[in-house]
Length: 120
View 1 (cartoon, one colour):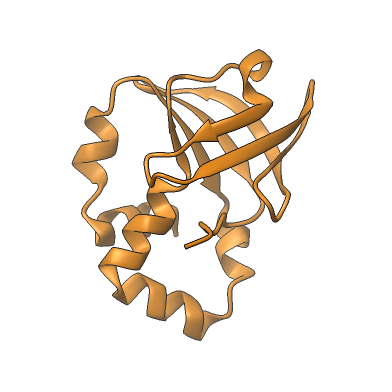
View 2 (view 1 turned 180 degrees about the horizontal axis):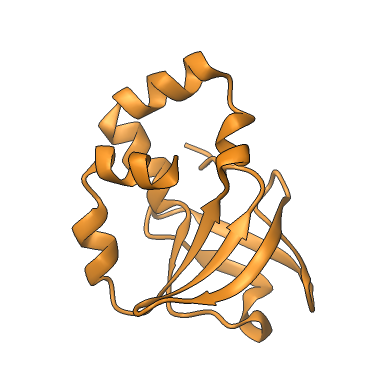
């Protein structure tokens, strides 16, 4: 679902070329928590979709040691991460990190169990 959303928002090249980012990647089940009608509406609205997706990306490759704290997202708002060790929560909705510090060519990925929603 995340890959489909990134493609619909036209963010594939931007994310693949971003140098050193941290991505909070919602699972398919996380997207499944959103009512289908609401999810379909967001997927059809490129501006809103882009805002939500870029809210899941933070500049810099954050290691677990750097993860706790408040970080400015590519969307512009800040996201707060709490916790330590192998137990982290992300954002106001306290999305749990279910798998963390997955290394890719240009990012550290933390897989989360809820979709983060920016304030605006």
